[in-house]
Length: 141
Image (tube, rainbow, N blue to C red):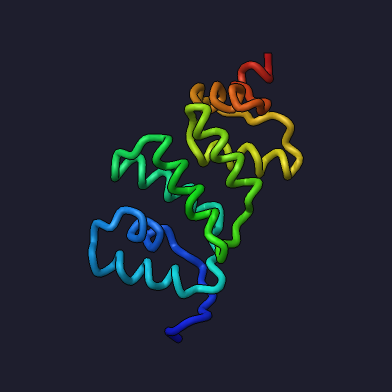
């Protein structure tokens, strides 16, 4: 199964090891795998987890997280839902969570016109990024 030309779906831990390199052996293996793969499928939930892990476990700031996600998404072999990733990045840059941007994007794609959440920070961040967002109390008043 090894060698060149492998098509993979990358789990979050593979991307974390390649980026953070806090485990030398796993970092080497992750980087070798990513460099050999002809297709690196990165489902959007992996980017959501990556953003969370980098923020919570490694105390990385929004700029570093955005740069990491952009670097991975920019790899030629990477296949992902680019519009959803861009929505997550826009939310991250607006001071919110990457996952909230993705959720709002996916909801809109599915027909939801307004992101509804009791998370005030998420609502404010989405509004700053140009999305329609509201507290449920605002929508029921």
